[in-house]
Length: 206
Image (cartoon, rainbow, N blue to C red; front, side, top):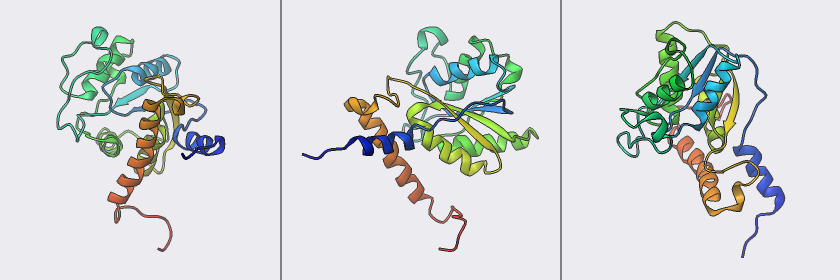
């Protein structure tokens, strides 16, 4: 029998569950998802005056090969959506965000593409971003920040995590489902960075 002690759990928690103090920003980035929670929170941040522009991004999961439908919130927001960003836009609209304050990206199929295609969209619209809020699922915070910060190195990105499925910074390790999700995040980051070998400038001579 092996044991993860309190320090080891704390180290994993602090790495995965990234969070920053909020400040007024130029945009709110919203990575793709078929759940409404983090987008509902983004709408709340908009109404609180934190940013004038919200950018939901997402086509469908590359693994699934197409949009598999809304996983939560269908009874409130509906089900007739072609992609994640269409669903997230509906969440924003029904939570009082005007359509003119939403810039939607509909092609991304995974988190890195959420960031890459959001940058292309901003360039096409001639929008300059200096500071952004990244509103994401709590257990996705580190990986989402990793990719958005790699794609937007000139932007100060503030991470605002939103717990879903009761997977929280305080309790994730207490359930098998929480452990599976968090350990999966650790695994995916390593695997995906390894797949990007040759595309990453490490800032020093190897």
